[in-house]
Amino acid sequence: MLKTKVGYSQNADNYLSGIETAKMAQLNNAKVALLFTSVVMDQESVINGVKSVADVPILGCTSSAAICTQDGYLNSEEGYAGMMSFGGT
Image (tube, rainbow, N blue to C red; front, side):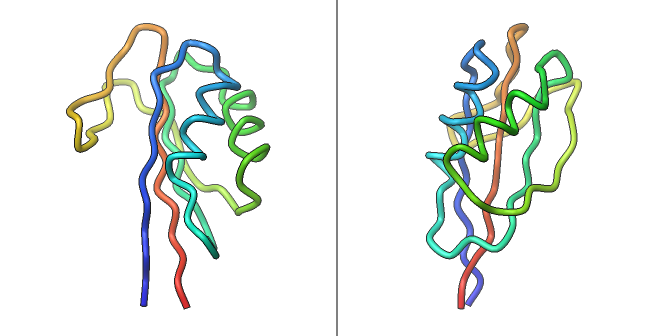
């Protein structure tokens, strides 16, 4: 059964944004994660934050507009990150 979990952050600190995003999206036995960040963020720093929490292959890209979450649209001049992890047995 495929399981997913989503996390996101609008923290202006790129590394901390990656940590917050990964912690929220942490899924036991995750096999891969999709990561989307704002174009204004330092993607390497966000990824380093994610990898400090989750040891999972990461795919993704940047967004110049916004990402949609259950709490509404994330769109901040300081940046944003969102991640969906996929796992299961």
